[in-house]
Image (cartoon, rainbow, N blue to C red):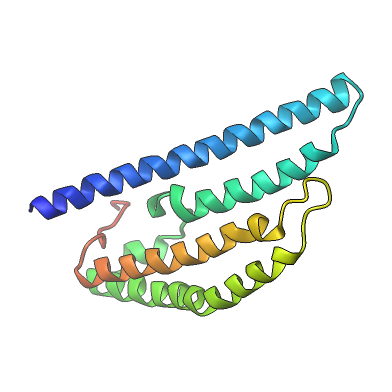
Length: 168
């Protein structure tokens, strides 16, 4: 029981850290956006670096959030079928769906890493940031999909999380 408690506390701290990183990325994106608007419309002096930084930060914010911040229960789902079937069918649906998503992500992970690593030789025009760093969150997203799918399959095999969200 002590081990489960330690794992739970560790998971909470990791989630808090991921949320803090996501918040810092979003705050930085917002600051760059405000600088961009102020320079362009207030001072009539557009800053080229702000456009590029905003695009890179937006990519990082969205993919970081999808990979590690937004919990699965907050994703948009169509649960009409889910609510109309029993626990065994739900278990099969969770396992089949996560085998497809996690399996495809696992198969695509090496190619994604190859592409991201290949893009190291190119850089952004203004900030001269390696495209490897721009596209690195894609690798993180693929890895997160594999890990989340494996965890969901394990939970489904154990019969955890198969209850109905909506009571009819």
